[in-house]
Length: 229
Image 1 (cartoon, rainbow, N blue to C red):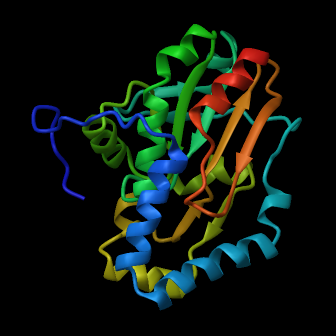
Image 2 (image 1 turned 120 degrees about the vertical axis):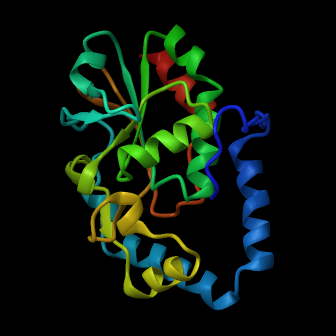
């Protein structure tokens, strides 16, 4: 993915649902990605499910751990500081190289104002370096903090991390997805995509974690849950 400055980049807001946007991307994957590669991805998702990652992941009613992480500008952001003011939406993503993560963050960007109107805050968390987060936030004009979770330490506390299997690593390398460079460590560890809403008492009131990286909650679902809190 080529990084472009704000002057070069003119991102358009896609008004379609995430379901429709992702269906288009899945069609492209089906058209251009070899069947054996698609089968491997499906196998990884199935193995994560069967391995119990969703049993380990924090879910509705659980206590969310506090954290402090640097944003795309290197400024430390504290979850407890946000929670002192209202609910907090936390979106765990894989990285700027993932088109489904990009689509989700652009969709969340379009409802940033609505989230704030409901007295809540929004942060996204990924294992990528601060520099990679800066590139992503700048290119896509993100209006919320994009936090760098070095070595997935926070994601691990939420129970959503896994090591990328060797065959998937090989595919990523062929596609020039250099996770050790993007994340600044050699662990080849990622979080499964997960979105949480945490209330002032650090209780999770909305949870959506899924090893299938092509399935993310609609922004409207987040606004609906915030309206209830």
